[in-house]
Length: 122
Picture 1: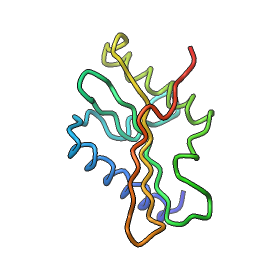
Picture 2: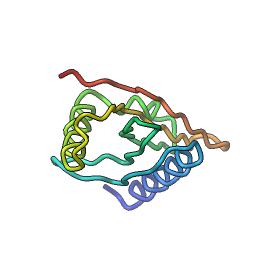
Picture 3: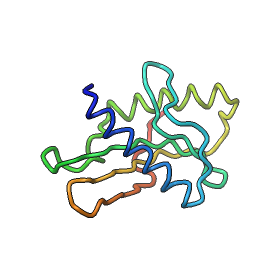
Picture 4: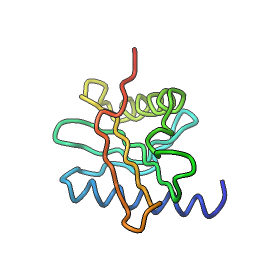
């Protein structure tokens, strides 16, 4: 990954974390790594553990950022989420998977929070 893309992604994650904190979420982890994958943000929304994938774009060339979270990425996030829940002894916790799309392709930056962006089949 190029240094530019890493900085863009990190700045989008920072903006998403600020948004979640201001929205009353309790931030639990950032960049949690396990099972050859990573979850950008893990937060608590009331009693629900929320696993958040952040996608940031600078141009409209490749479509909407949230569309970049395909089935393969969803499955990878699910494996990392399970590792997190096991490590914290939270296997009975209610969970959901959200996507935050940070769109910087326009002068007025936009942030979209998609709750329950996807579900995993057992």
